[in-house]
Image (cartoon, rainbow, N blue to C red; front, side, top):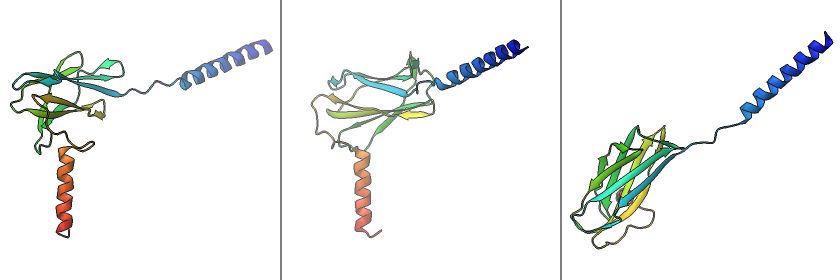
Length: 156
């Protein structure tokens, strides 16, 4: 009887330790990754450029993102064009576009998927480069700064 009790106690302790060790093993956190590319990075006027956002979540290719939107603008421009893009294949969302004005351009991909948001930004050139934007500031930020300055001048 004592042997049976010892065997049952040992088995019970083994089960508890196995359960604890399994709980201690945590999954590595997964992140929404977006690889944004422009091909070619330097194009001529009216030449088609292919923009691709390759989206992954851990090792999974994201084919069902909640939203993928490309925001494109010429350096120093006040207006930004926003274009919603759909999934092509293998987690790649793409857009083909040409430009009729030379200069330095920027594109941000706004990607929402798996309750996360990622928005990488790249630069590309059409024809001859134009004056680049100030480091770390987009046109929208510059406009916000101007608006707050004008409010300060009016005493608001």
